[in-house]
Amino acid sequence: MSTGLIALLDDVVSIAKVAAASIDDVAGQAAKAGAKSAGVAIDDAAVTPKYVVGFAAARELPIIAKIARGSLKNKLLFLLPAALTLSAVAPWAITPLLMMGALFLCYEGAEKVFEAIVPHKAQAHEARVGAAAADAKSLEDQKVASAIKTDFILSAEIMTIALSAVPDSTLITQAVVLAIVGIGITLAIYGAVALIVKADDVGLALASSDLGSPIGSLTRGLGRGIVRVMPGFLKTLTVVGTAAMVWVGGGILVHALAGYGFTGIEHAIHGFAVTVASRMSEGLSGAVEWIAGAAGAGLLGLVVGFALIPLVSKVFAPAWAWIKSLRGAR
Image 1 (cartoon, helix red, strand yellow):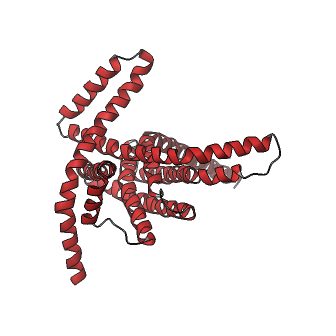
Image 2 (image 1 turned 90 degrees about the vertical axis):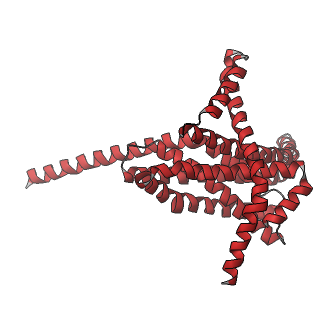
Image 3 (image 1 turned 60 degrees about the vertical axis):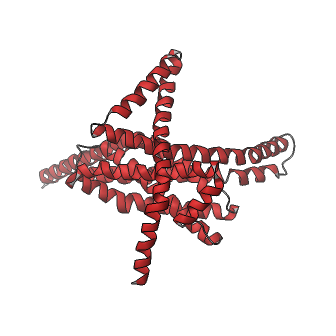
């Protein structure tokens, strides 16, 4: 009896060790996959704050919460099972789908640039594609829907990169790693966005604090500094978000085309980046090469996006309106 009990305990200990090793393995792979996805996550964090610019302060956190819920739904309900299914059944379909998403990002980014350069024409374009909202509630719903659509594309890239980091793992391990990466990155992105957009409220609270000297004067000075800096910071972040759209979209297109054998654009961008970096000091060459490469991908994304604007306005938007009218008639 005692021998049997000891053997059973040995088996339990062995199983526990295997389970612990598996947990460590999953955690390690999740960390690796998350690190590889960090670049796109940063783009996502830069893109999102522009969707709350112009709204009342009381609506900022609710809007971010709506977008965060949509992001989690994108990753866990749609992209996770789709990524696992495509990886197992039709891996060839992943790249074309990513290219479609890249085209959307290029269009979104170019549209924002178009709006900044020629606002009157941009308003006419928005009217043709049905982008104008009638009231504050409609505008908020429109912004949230647009943010979730953009998040879907960036989330698809994040989940694809995470999946590529664990190609030889079991299906269950891949699913757990993708879930961990999806939840962790979403919380990190939208937590950071919430802090960014509410920083001005924190600044106002600090500026009006009634603490005594010298701490009080320092606190109030810090608060006034935050209040002065945040409007410009948010505008800068909007520019960064737009640049991130065309950069990520252009980068996806460049790498996808190279994967299909069209390597000319990739080689041209790489050659340009190397040439620019070679003129810099050794300490700066790596960073300059990366920036030049990103600029090349962003320029391609901008060109593609501008080419899509008339197509969307004159072809896709009318076709979509016609389809919606048919559905409404039924």
